[in-house]
Structure formats: structure tokens, C-alpha cells
Image (cartoon, rainbow, N blue to C red):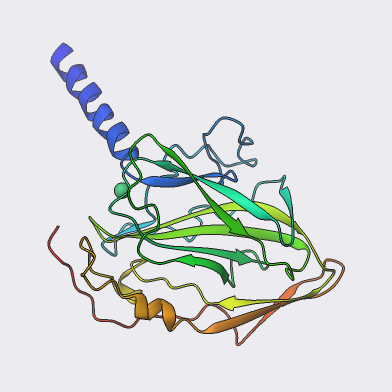
Amino acid sequence: MLRKSALWIAALQLVALVAYAHVDLIAPCPRYSSAPGCPPPPRGQSIDYNTNAPISSNGINIQPLCKHSVPYAKRKVYKAGESISTGYGIGSSHGGGHCQWALSYDREKTWVVIQTEIRTCLQGTVTGQNVNIPVTIPIDAPSGEVTFMWAWINAVGDREFYSNCADIQVDGRDGGSISGVELLLSNYNTTYGLIPEFPNATDPDDHELFDARKPITISVKGSGSGATSTPGGTQLLNTRPISFSGD
Ligand SMILES: [Cu+2]
């Protein structure tokens, strides 16, 4: 009996370790974050103690983009043109990778990428460190309730896709449009293909796929009505054949 419970404790510790093995957005508060200062989860939802776990690993264990679909009731307000000091909790930086930051005005149906960092994103960060990366809300961003996403494709290790989302309010123009590129979903699941590991500076990192992201413009009607987008939704990108490089 005693041995058995000791084993259980060891197993639970292992689970806890695994939970710390990745990276998460910690500011602005991602949905249902356990971080101090973050709001309680919305009614019917529970705290996510694994916000730092990928939403897809080697094309399996798929969770929805953002991990959770019910937004927080309260939103932090940012002005169009404002730089957000986004924060990250580092468990393992996996050699860095590709980051995309995207906004959705239609509850995560359509995404416009507003900032990208290829290859070096979170590279060289160490376990336990908190890292800040400035992300600027475009000056022409229309007002509205917006989902703000950080997405990450790691350089080294299992082929993972990370996605954390914060619920924000953008204080900008009353209606109008915002332009950027579509969100690249490589590594999200096998449909989108996997980017092989790129541990060394000379390794190919599939940055061409990022260069090839299609432009997208999201139009937002004035005074709080809905959003429309052209050419229509986040399209499937990256039809590269699936390949695993040994890990
Ligand atoms: Cu990880």
C-alpha cells in the first residue's frame, strides 16, 4: 500500500515536470491561466495548469486553437498603436523557433497575423526565466473585442504547435479594416504538415512557408457590429509532405 502510493506520488511528480517542459504566454493573461493576477476562469470552465503545453505534438493530441474557446468575461483594453509587453514563462525553449502573433475579431474564425519572428523566437531563453517581447497593435486596428494569439513552432524536439490566447479590447477606429497575413498552421496537425527540426543555423527552417502566407484583410463594421474578412477565412497553408526527423 505504502509502495503503491509512493509510486503514485512519483507519477504525479513526473506529470508536473512534463507540465513545466514547455513555454506559455503569461501576459496578457491567456485563457484560464493559473498565473497570479489573472482573472478566474469564466463560469463553467476551470483553471488550466497546463497553459504551457503545446496544442499539437507530432501531429497528434490536437486541441483547438487558443486551447479554450470561451473568452474571459473581462478584457484588458489596449489602444491601437500601443505596444504590448507580452510575457512568456520558459520551461524549455526548445532551441527557439517561429512565433506568430495574430488577432481575431470574429471569435477565432479568422486570424490576421500582425507580427512574426522567424527562427530566433525565444531562442537562448532559460528555464525559469520570464521573457518579454513587444508586440504592437497596428495603429489602424479597428475597435472591438479581439482575441490575441501567440503561436509558436519550436525548433528542437517533438514537432509542436503552441497557441495561447488573451481576450482584449482594442480601442481604435470605429470600424475599418486591418491587414496582415494569414496564420501559418504548420505542426498544428498532420493536415498542415510538419516543419522538421532546425537545431543548427544552417538547417532549413521552412521560412519560405511564412513568406508565402497570403495577405488577409479583416473589415470591421462601426459601432460594434460583426466582422467580415477577405478573401475568406484562414486558409490551409503548407501542403508539405509530412516528415519526422528523429527526436
Ligand atoms: Cu515543450
